[in-house]
Image (cartoon, rainbow, N blue to C red):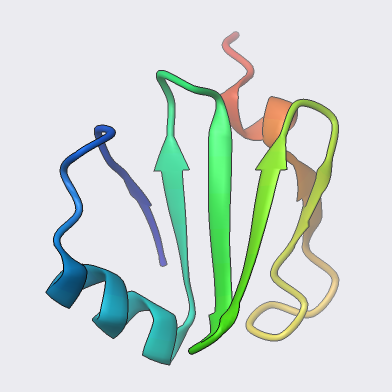
Length: 71
């Protein structure tokens, strides 16, 4: 699941639930993606860095830039 959020919008309870189940958190204003793949695993992607959802969706690598590209 991917969710767009504002910086400061997250509460610790929400963060803990996301980390347990795996989640992508999108921050459009910063053009960043936080990809939670486990309780203690997070990848922070920005620009052309590849974000992988391999554990949840095999074969779905994409860059942060592609996720935020308009047009």
